[in-house]
Length: 378
Image 1: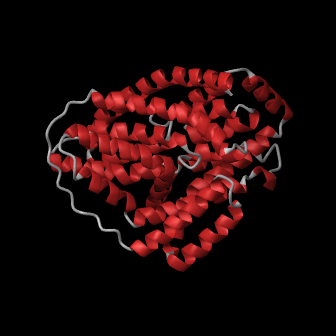
Image 2: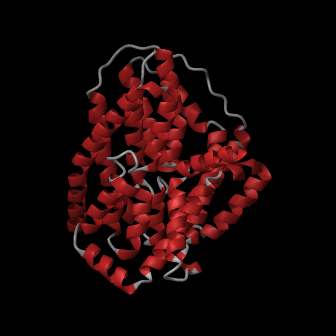
Image 3: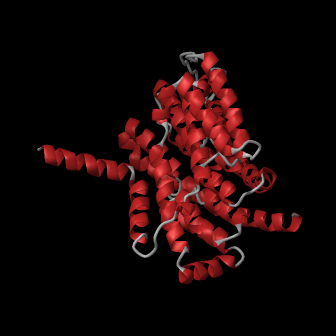
């Protein structure tokens, strides 16, 4: 019985961390034809991710985002206003707190409101998922693929924003149109006030967040920011170090090794570089590969073989729509919803697929048009 229970735990862990498992397996297999090198691992990306995850964990613990959301929602008088606040705050928060953190924070709040109103908030959750994935496109720290592209290609913040701003404007219009089509009904929401646990500690981590952002944009050396993060966290709240998603960091290391070994094979490197050199091919590859393996692995697989970072960032960010696995953040919101409304899993999946495919169909050609406009202007 103990052996059976142990196997079940292993299977459950593998299912939960399937991306990490795939990354490690690919890394190990690739080592049979090429010896890995330390130079394959981008420590800047890893340290920046670590820093961001620590400070965001502090914000979650201090209930900063919950405090802001509840205070905004208490002023809502109808369903349209409530939807606007839930989707809007998710959209904006994802730009600075990452798409998955925005969903982990605000989806539970949406589910609480659904219970209070005795409704199943499928559309709100689906729209929040779209908002998190699209809103996170604006900044380098909004999602892991953006941070990877930003550091891998050494992009300047101004150049990145030139590409990302157009997509975010299109995304806001798309989400606004979805919200305008929803019916408006009068509702009353009673939410318990949120008290932040330690305001002084929160202030320390807000300052630390500014320091980390300065390292992301290149004002401060990322290694100095890492040292400051470690020292501050150990002195103020060392438990935050246990809340870092180390599986994501290990996943990155696995893909770094696999891709490094793959790029070291001349025939494969030449073939992929020749293919992705054609105009639009990197963009299309990012869109398509994201649907199958999700946009973070797709980014890491394509980056070493193309110089077209603008096509890549738009391809994988827009490619976060479509299938449920196109963005791993979408899987988070699905699990949170199904845990509360298990009987509505099929209805959620149908609604999610419909609106995500619609978004992909509308924004994919607009994204390519945006690329052409950028080429003309800059």
